[in-house]
Image 1: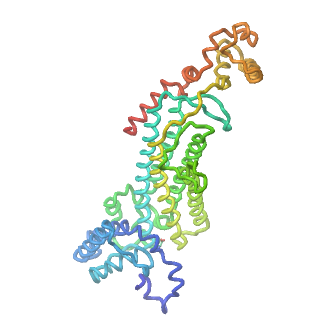
Image 2 (image 1 turned 90 degrees about the horizontal axis):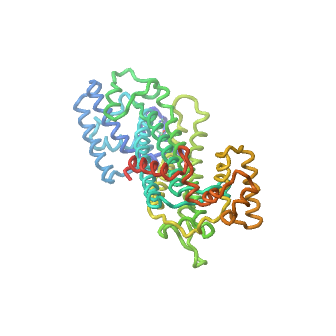
Image 3 (image 1 turned 180 degrees about the vertical axis):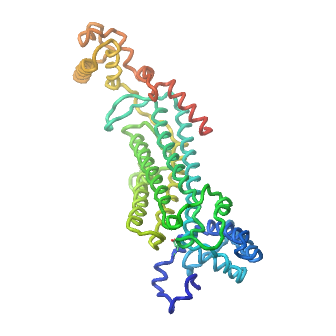
Length: 455
Ligand code: ARG
């Protein structure tokens, strides 16, 4: 296939070098954006009288045919093409003849690839944000269904205090909301139209970049042609948001894995998302969640790859930048899959058969705050409850069985009403602070999220 730059070259390029530099195998998926961008460009060239309207009309109708083939999935790639831009140009020329030669006026592949990738990233961000909302919705529904369930919460993976399950679930929803915010924030800086920066310095032709930006739905045009063709920050920002999303889901996956073991038994993961063992017939393994946890390693390295790729590059375009595509596409594809699977996980998640919460040490902070409310200092209260907890463990003595005299032996400010505190329901109920696990507050949060997400 003829190269877009072949004329001034002596002889043919090396076959292995061609193979090595070819990007069509991975940038073919940008064809849709290449064509949509080119339609806007050709229409602008005609409007500005840079090319005749008759040529532009042929170009646009040819490109529209290609676009409909892309949409139907019948547009074929050509492994001999150097990249997606050369391929579209080549197919167009075969379709409409010499008018196709006028399409590349006032632009270069350097600004074109920047345009294509920006358009792809914008669509991808919108999709990921939608998918995240679906996962949040599934989590909120699971929380609503089990709104009065109380579970232990951990620090250092040691029993800490009791919380509403819904409170725990809404922690995930908050994490995911920040992921959406990060993506939408990255969107703002991606939404800048680079076409017309040409190779690096702009063009002497009277192009109208603003009209192209408008037609393509970009909020702004870029203000510096050199920056436009060499900036890949927007790719890095998207990869960074995806990496963090991956880390969040890795943590969620880890919790669901551990909390659904027979040892914990708080959750039950649906059979459809588990696998068995080839040797141990009794096994039900949470492989999908394990793989979600594992894939986050890849998402982190995708980000790392592009950071390292970019770090030594001088302005402006360098061919190294072609290599941002594979990590970008891989991360985006993986993120989509993870989100779709996580939605299924929460839609089908059930409560396990964990034992009721008998351990009195869960309520040590509540008992401490009981004393603090009666004017005892934090330190003194901590020491008192420390002694109590020690005895409870050493002598298996339940607070419920102690009489007022025994309680007062620990601290004179104790009355028998302290015994009411030693149960999970009371523990969550007495929490008051904004953002706490108090059932009324959690209900309010659930309502807020449900209406925000239309759950
Ligand atoms: N395939 C290239 C990329 O993805 C397109 C730009 C090529 N530009 C060039 N000067 N060789 O970056």
